[in-house]
Image (cartoon, rainbow, N blue to C red; front, side, top):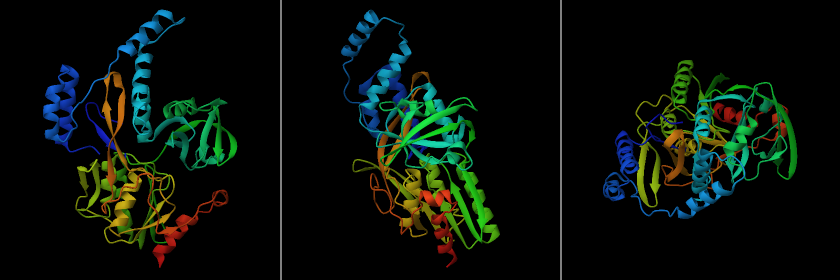
Length: 399
């Protein structure tokens, strides 16, 4: 998730080195010296919000003293600290801003790299503050079980998950390889139960193939490794003389913003991919390099309801510059950027720092991105092994 001492943005980009260094100096000084006046003086120079206001923790201290004095049982002080920090952050009311303790931060990092360990092969994300299946991986227990993207998880092993954090739910689903987990979901108004045997899960970031003269590039996430793998596949497409390329980002919930910029750079030469704004102020502007391998090659992009964040950034940029045709269903609609900030003891604060806008100036938060060609993918299609969305994308390029 983060390298020690660094901060990363997510959209899910690292800032420029200068800005990250400046922030590190400011935050480090503030944490070590508690001198808010110095921080407030220096922060605006680097475009950083000054620290304002303080919280009165007298009531929290009172609660802690009374709890410790009266509670009949053992109290873990670190658990109390984690709980207080988690509640403080959750009270901001933003589902993408959250506190991760050390174990959760480590699990988050493994998720990003695809090293899931003992699990079921499903990506679980927050949708309207509810744990929801974002996608299932082909050939995994989840993929074979019948779980579908959009299923809302309501119980794990008959334990209701209402009120639990997303990380709590994911931890309940994971476990020792070979053991079984029972998952209860809501699909629309219908309740369904699945008994799934956990297996070792290592999810690939990139898949590629050439079918009928069309290159198919599937991106499952946006991490630090996916760009090299995607560019390698793109070069293979060019060497094979493909007629066109399908970029499949269905079910891709996002990742590093800088990876989104570099993926868009496979098609776009020296173009603005995304603009970050805090209020009306432009905070950052990300531009591609000048080595677009697939520039000029006809492209279709597959999107669906679970394509979010970095996926939407890439889809929006390719669509705005009219270098690709979007096919499938409207995307999820996540138009904000998060930054990971290291805390004491290995904990991490994931905090929304800006909204992002497409090259044409649109913020898609809650609205999503509509495809030019809408194609359904039903449960019946999945059960029959059909993929009408991919078929449409391939046939469009054969014209």
